[in-house]
Length: 203
Image 1 (tube, rainbow, N blue to C red):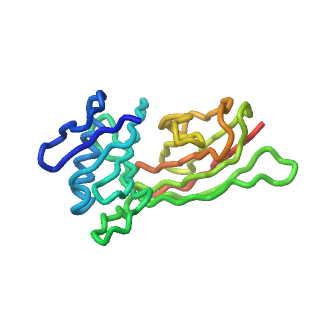
Image 2 (spheres, rainbow, N blue to C red):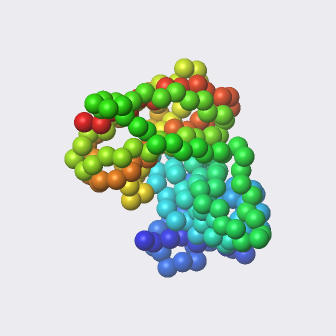
């Protein structure tokens, strides 16, 4: 997989052999990581960059080998910057408390093909829901905020996007093409906490 590297000595430069050009979202995430990531955040590699109409999900690995998740919007603002996999290197990249991410596995009752869960997300936080499903099954997802607005995204077992960042007003129904744990991530990019229901179905 091609990767894009950034360095503290040349602002926003592309040093790797990758032919992919830096996007505005890439640069916004790099700048933000340099602000919050401590010494290790001054340089590193962009592992992936997936865009949609709502925003761009950028995964960055800093010089200390800590993996960061960043969501950037078209106006250059950052909706989320959080540590996905922290490296214990003694230098300590700084984890952003505003972007806390929780994860839980979705369990269906015996004989049921659906489940409904409730949650509350603080500003900048997200919740990941892990669903075990098989190739060619159909997945249904509906995110229903009780106040405010939310976005969500769906990732395949291999980490690729099944659905890019989507506003909660739109539900998802589609056929799966991989077998394993699919991740539905619900994201609050607003400035206040949001209570919500999320509904899952597998057929």
